[in-house]
Image (cartoon, rainbow, N blue to C red; front, side, top):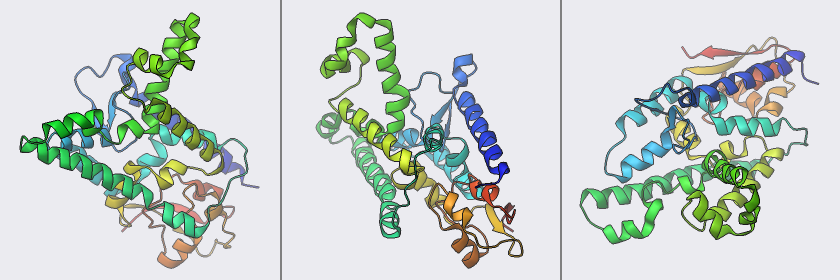
Length: 311
């Protein structure tokens, strides 16, 4: 049984996440006519109400057009170096979705240590392959070569990860489908005709079905494994973890007098970090996988953990 403060904290954090989501979509209020700001979150640039851009979309697009993303990359580095992956835990809309799903009372699965350590590396491979592809396209563009190759890649040339992004599927593609069906209730048959549906919602490609199936698989996994996407597949998380490493200014410390080593902190961590082990070894939670959600702090029955600034 967790202390009452843990439940209260969950409510407060979820409220903050919803407020962040509203701010991210401030364009619906008509207050973002002049500019949008790229942030280190997984949020598609195709959302019409977005006042802020998912920075990874910007990085892909600019590199593929032979323009180095100085500003966007600078934002990533500064935030990662000071706050670590805090945006993953508190701001990212897809993180909010994962948290809401994890609150449903299914028994959570603990991934074996060997599988967990292997799967954590997959997101870095996704990041590497994405940057490699846009880098190749960017070099060809800068040299005014490979037009046929770039044309053959189509949409994948400039944002190769985006068509596979579950965030884009959830926040852009599915709303388009729902909007069309809601405005044309007599044509529900389009659901059974994928090619017609693709044309109607202007989604390029035959990977629409893959997108929806992939999202469905991920959502199912999230019922049993908290923050599955963040842990193992998110390239934004990989990029932030690379820059934050173990040296971000914001960390978590342990009061060794109060701590009874019950390991509640490790059990509640959505990223499956062995919190107590790391704290005992390093004196503070310096782990690049930490999303600073602070679940461990408020779940601790002895109030032995606290947020701290690295000196």
